[in-house]
Image (cartoon, rainbow, N blue to C red):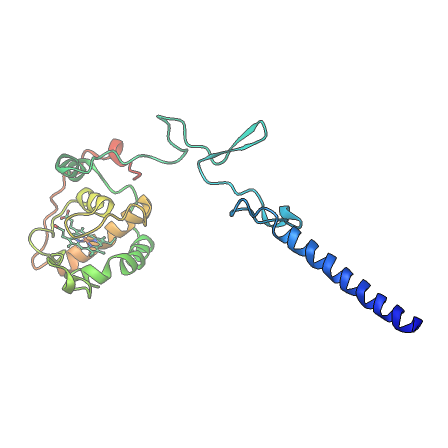
Length: 219
Ligand code: HEC
């Protein structure tokens, strides 16, 4: 009899322990129910709550304000960066053609680099030989004219650079994909294609005297 009583008591104790544990579990896991965004109790929160810094924003920690990646001071430019001075309008286009000269001297190496870039960024529209017959060109309402067409065979290098920078008609701007240096290398290659495909010997049109001061660009 005594034995039976002990067994029953033991059973009840176990049940009580389970009950307490379950109650604790529900109480703890339901913490923060009043706030649906609360994650409840967090174990070692700093492991998964590292401070994240957004670029060009300031973050406040206590009394400190941390400036992540500061914006340049107004009216200044970064070292080595020269802004492209010609505006994206017809006047800018005309002036680029008149005054802008390729600052990168021609060499076979530069031409080769220009070709690689041209193949990546331009061939699909302009075609491998610049005939305006790239695969994408066929889908455009107005395919690009051949570099050796009468309108383009004498295109000044400054205008070519300007167009690569800002885009023109169905051609998008390439300033964000290509540095100025890369754009000028491509211009060398485009000039090669202009000459290669030219139906007649192309007379040089661009006046050469103006160079130095305006060869900067940096869009
Ligand atoms: C989406 C297709 C497309 C891509 C990509 C493209 N172009 Fe063009 N490009 C055109 C079209 C279309 C024109 C004709 C624009 C006009 O005169 O309205 C053009 C015109 C030009 C001209 C003549 C500019 C002028 O001032 O008349 C040059 C030079 C040129 N592209 C070079 C390039 C180079 C270099 C690249 C690669 C960096 C390139 N294009 C990428 C479609 C493209």
